[in-house]
Length: 372
Image 1 (tube, rainbow, N blue to C red):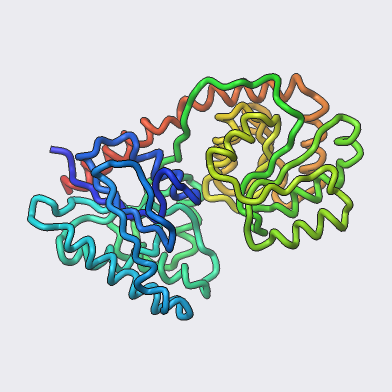
Image 2: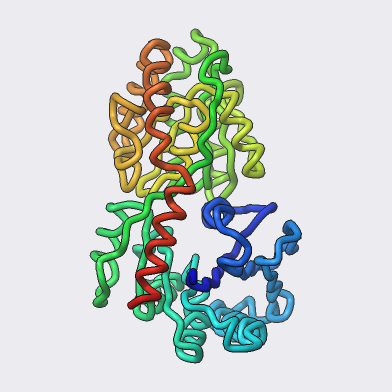
């Protein structure tokens, strides 16, 4: 008998707002409805999803919004409600989960309570690393790492950073790279567009992207290329001001937030994707660029180096070095034969990243955890 699995997630189909939501939605679409129950906790968002009996929505934000001024009290109250709602869902011993998959440390207190009450195992899927020990998320991460029976992360780099960043004893995380929807795509007849897709923040390197475009403004104008920034975030105003200061309005268009489907559509029409992150636990956007037939130019930071093979499936540049990025970008847009060779190679590499393969690895881990 397959292990009974509960999943705690902040996002699920069809309205996916972040990387965790994309991951969870794709991963568990490979399961059948009787294999796992997904508890979708939308933080203040409307719970809209397909009629699938494995999805249970818990829209709790409205019940505790008045605690919003104190993030720690809000966190505790939120977890109390999650614990209470799931406890009521478990109506008899046959519905007690063997394993709970926790996507996001925000659920740490509820997960600890469920483990203590029902004796279930906890699998913590660690999507990123919080380096700032004064950030509230660091406390949540530490709590979750202490109580988890197994930790999964998307790259070897993330696993090493977890061991270095959190001074607490736990087993080496299990590395399961993220997946991607693998399908035949058009790799030719694409528009001369260079894309940045992601959160507009210092960590994601959007400023590096804009500075590289500024450095290449003459080349881009001569070759007919232009750039787009897809995404929003805390540095949005600063990036907009930088574009105005450098007089790049005719070369860079800021699109703001686009739904995941619309962002993929934009990728499918463009030639080049730049991923200039300063530290990237995995780099799912790079895989999405591969899947849409783009040439990916990424920083040599974090898990990106495990996805992009420099000179074979894409191009790596020195992290935070806009001059190096500009040089690599100029070479790619002026050598279309090289760009197409990299794109073709990336298409062949995608087969390893199918979601079916990822789900099989999770299933094997579930079986092992249940037996032990």
